[in-house]
Length: 498
Image (cartoon, rainbow, N blue to C red; front, side, top):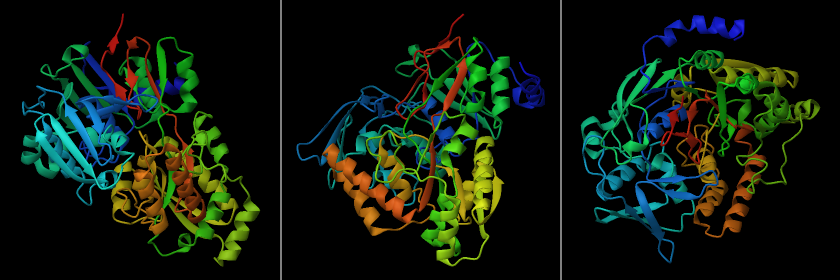
């Protein structure tokens, strides 16, 4: 172990306090999750915890094929306006409440209320019927190509109606779902503890009595905890440390290739130079995105300029990633008539890799005529500031993973999007995104998404920076961990050998 890693390990003594039994699985997260509630959750670390606790209505595999979960089978009507879901029988929530069609309806109705984080995901639903306890019929006003994928994400994680009634909006403090692990306790900025539910229908397939999530923001400290054996798996390994893991026979890596996009978002309602698209284009021209990917992520991630990755069939090849051109950036600023250097502030989550990206953006943009400042605060604070509209730009930030391109585009770019913190509002974009949901022909859907990406290239309401390929590092003795299609660990069948 290097002296640097050992020093970090010693400094992290408080993080490594406490005892764990051999029947515990200890996972280190990069951030303290926000609400443990799929309806209000915005952070991927929260999904990591919820995915460990809760069985989903549906799942996807690595190729985004839809797989059964709490819904064992499903079918669309001939006119594609009714989706019938057949639920597993004799299933109960962790508090003993029956899981049935009424519970599904209660949870979906809660999620699709205006103002929730999931609202824009579920606007295609016009009504929900429950003809019997094991059958849910979802009605849509027009075909909804994205709906099954949506129900295989957070929108397929459901809480006990009894818990919802008791806790109300605070249910994320004591979540109760259907799944292998029950919520036990949470200590802010330190840990979340789950314990096995012996009554879960697949309990025999889960080896660990407890799962303990440790909150360890520093990348080197997370790795040090793994190397010392104090945790068994870590998320979001700094790609610059990947070679260290590869060279250690006691460790292993799993890379997540789920669709995602990371961007710089602009507050388009805030008066200032960034309201002019020419200034935003100048900012993008000041960036060498591949250099950012190489310097910060050791080339493990991919440079971006659209919500679809360059290797995706949805990528619009008419708009390739622009090369860095400082002279062209300054010319655009002159055309916009703004005084240089242009003041510009980025709200940056206080994560080591995010800060590094911010620092590179700062250095590159300063050379092109911007006076770029970084406002580095903890992630939870960025959520509050952006919700209040108290920011000029925010990033790098974005959807960490998705089962369908709809999840990357609609929440951010639709005027009704639940994560459209920049308040981008374009009727043509809304029309195109609505049309992608109604398109049942895959070729038509691809064409519509490409048109949407052409509009992004013109308006530039966000600057797409890169597509992640996050790395989980784990003990080599921890076998059987797999990932959902949207990139979260599945512990069914996982165990520590030897």
